[in-house]
Length: 450
Ligand code: UGA
Image 1 (tube, rainbow, N blue to C red):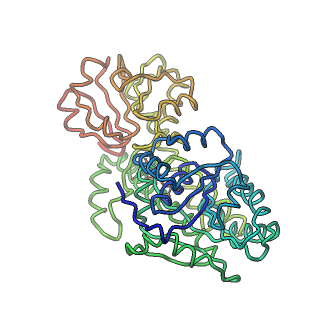
Image 2 (image 1 turned 120 degrees about the vertical axis):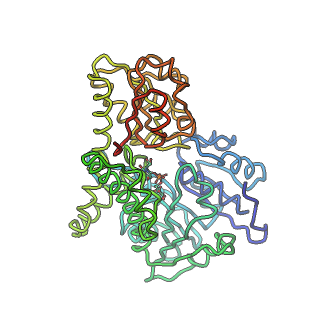
Image 3 (image 1 turned 45 degrees about the vertical axis):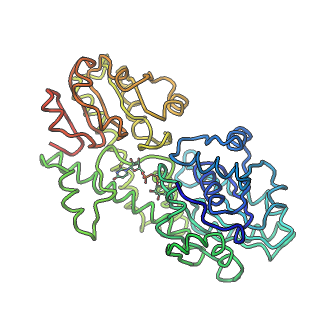
């Protein structure tokens, strides 16, 4: 666990608006750096949990950081914007920007609502650091609006400080990021950079790269980073389709091309594709925004990236059908529901999407996930949920591994031999050893593997 690295002398007071994955992690980690932090949210349920030291979602290591800093008196939570405006002149904005219903564009209502409510309360010079993933142009718009609404007027700054944390590694990524990026308003040079240097002093001492850009570039850094990652995954999944057609093995192909440092092996894992609360909606919002700016042609390839990604889910359903003969009346075990391991997040989860499609085609689907059961039940109440991996596999005609949790990677064919009806396993994340399963008398199918 990280040590407390800032001394009380450089401690600042700051607020963090939004206590989801991003906001809660940022608030706890800023307190871990020694700062005094007030987390603000409109959801009383979430606030009560956090104040009691409970993280409302599963994120390894976060609970310890949260508790340690609440106990140290550096971290508190409130729903009161008045209290927040009184508490500090440094505000971080980390609320969600989900996909708008029926559209590709991001829904900015949570971001806008923070500014509309907070700005009228800003009576002293203040800096608002946006961390949410937003369409390019948002920071400038919010800055103008905040200055219109705030009694402090021109002394209110909006800067953009995008967040690159991954779920499952949120604490590590926040305290030891690859880089810090800060977009500042070049037309109105203010205190934002100096304040950010104080906030992140401990990270800068560690030698972490700090890039100061204009507002639009900072916003685009985030959008393009996620677009690149999504593209990398869809690239390897496209190769997976070709491997399937040609009888080649995409995992070996990925290892081989990954040795080229220009390509790199990370994010080249073929399987049922990307999901979660970020990559899918971020590439869509990026396309929508480029369209508004008249640069839609530049990002038409992201439509293909999205299509390749969605096709992998369909392919998984086909593989399950091939394995069963017909899905109608078959029993399908689904191991994994979270969009990736070490998370209980099921937003746009490929695993749950596949489970749902298979059930709609007449199979009985039994799902097990080590952490995401409650969220899965809330999103897909009609699926059957099992208490354990073995229980999910009971009497199964096919076992589908859809999230690569360590627990599933460690499964041995002999663990399931007497449990299933037919010894057929489809590895949607290419995370098992085909030779072991075949040697155990199982039919093994991977994605993009012979
Ligand atoms: C992603 C980015 O990686 C973060 O840098 C970013 O800050 C975050 O979105 C965000 O915008 O908030 P995250 O959604 O936590 O982070 O998850 P990733 O680790 O990127 O995985 C996304 C999806 O891609 C998962 O469903 C994962 O299973 C899938 N994936 C990942 C693959 O299918 N293959 C791979 O090789 C890697």
